[in-house]
Image 1 (tube, rainbow, N blue to C red):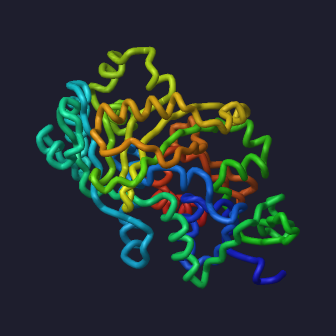
Image 2 (tube, rainbow, N blue to C red):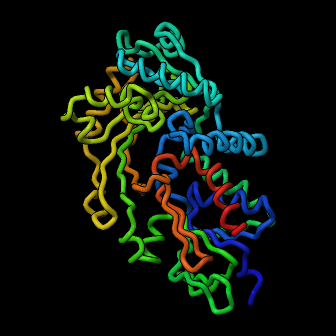
Image 3 (cartoon, one colour):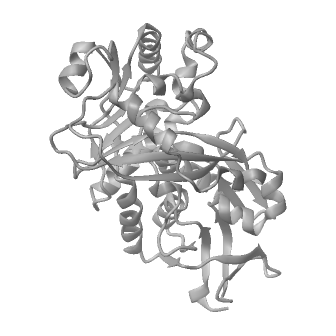
Length: 389
């Protein structure tokens, strides 16, 4: 058996989950071969806001998010992966949302996660583009960071490549993955090459579906299609950090812990375009002045994945811009580009889909919209668990 084709760990999928598995494995001295079927990651990892916001996570996942913040800072101190610490703000637009941010602030105080209640005047001072009359108060998280999603993952791969324990193979897909007679996991690639490892982790919903189709279709995974857009660079508008608005307060998991959550949700209109399209409005300005605005959410079972389609809806884009324009008075609303991203999420209470096949093949996918925020911390603990079994 050629040592070049043998590793301690095979990772299938080069997105944020797979890459952080590789980061922790190589740090512990394991030899890792990471396989990515494209020439570079092109999926959900590069099609999101790049907001690292533990503030939006529930009590189970928030510790992973907090640990992820530390890991992002640690890497950034050694190698530029585009991390910027400018905090996150949740802008309440009415009394219901104001109640929820006060309640979450109280919860944060008990869990010792720093947050600051801001008056409307403080919010307008920090974000002068805010339209008069929208904001009645805010909840600010100074520790939170953002990354450029289209830069971060590529820089992380460059950082990993400096390790003698790491090897990446792009444009390499896996045709077959099974436990070999010799007790190792055997992967057959598209080129016919055979790779061997003590363990394998499948970190992509697409690869899970291709390699183990029956298990994939029997899973509780759902496909989620989001639509986002980027406005042309406008240095005249200054929007520091991650900006989340009233609809985000009404959507994010952390607020479901609030005592008033059920009453607030019961008062919402049952029929609205934001509910129909799963829209909440977020802003994030990139270093070049471009502003990302979004996003929408459409759902389908993995068996009906195709019905989500590949089209971008002009109606959704128009609605998001119209709603965003009620919140911010920007210099320009000219759209530079728009795109859709699709990720998998699980219905399981654990918040991530995991399945072990034959003791040595581990499927870890369906982390949903919290991948950028929590993968760095989650993968550290999950890797320790499977390697200590």
